[in-house]
Length: 478
Ligand code: BG6
Image (tube, rainbow, N blue to C red; front, side):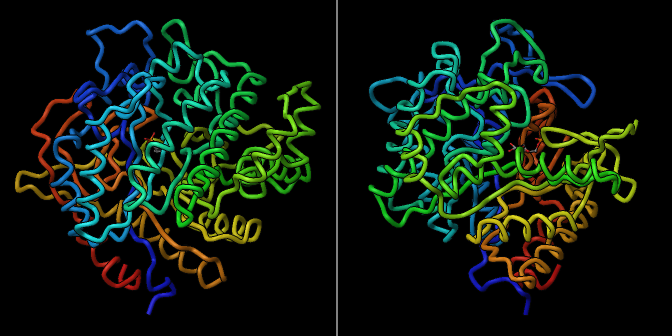
């Protein structure tokens, strides 16, 4: 018998803007991702406020899940998924973000998805905002810099709570909420929307404005939690942290101290606020040192206290190493890279591979919060080859996930209350950082390329049957 709980939630995760396509169908409005072009590992994606039909915008087509969700969910069920993490497209429900009434056809689409999941006893885990907001909110309100967006979000969240109360228990108010801490404006959660064309990584930035916008996001999240619990006290709300696990590159005390402080600031601030209900002292102090006033009122403090989450979830792809000394070789990564770690291999996209880092992270976050923990993203983006006979051999993906599951079980045996594992991109989807399709994460191959050509036919990779056995044996066979 494996160490995992009997009712462990094995599953996979996706996001609306990376799978749905059908970007203007049935009343959907434009989302910020509908104006981001395709890029590559060496050629950055571009945000184009003025839309040019010469560009290719991958989210508009994605993998056409909008029309093929039944087939996709049937494949998840065939793998034995106990849970499926999906996100709802805000601009499908409120096309302009500030519409008086929701778009019934958009709501109906998710009714159908939830009914289909229920048919197979798959538990939905729903992200309310996966870095993906209606474009009109970005252009008209300048996104989260504007306090009015808090009410728009809460109205949207309440619409979902009321409509899907009978289907959904697990909610995640925001995907990777700490991205705003880590990097520029993080588009969908954007602090500042670019007025002119710029690269994805070259968005206009202002740290103070970003921190004020982030405060609005926390208030929106807490208000949604409060409203959700009034609608259904069985709802569970989770954090969703992009956990960038950090190591000192050397044992120089300056390196150790600097990594410790960065970990507090970048990894813990957001989960401390969402689980402990207040801004931590080190973050407030850091703001003071930088001369930043986020204008935190007593009313804000009260809302944050009342709207705390119930469980901790995070994405984990890699660790990074950092140093105050000079090291030349760099790695890339999810949101940010670091200095090359000589003990780790890297993916083709230069993301370090570190399964032991997952055990370390699980112990670290459970020790800090003592609430149930769920891994809501983990996986490896690779180039896959579709053979003439329809097979796809992906031993590298099996190896990556297997090694992470081994470390997860060790963490469970260490005493961590781990309740679920959602493999990222359980079906191939559009990569956020590069916009490519060829950077594939799935157990299911989708026959389309970086420019949306192809049959969109679904094929099972070797990892499909392997993951099925993992789930069947509750993690014992791997
Ligand atoms: C996470 C995001 O940061 O990383 C996902 O929540 C994203 O949406 C994933 O797809 C992997 O990153 P990428 O750039 O390979 O798609």
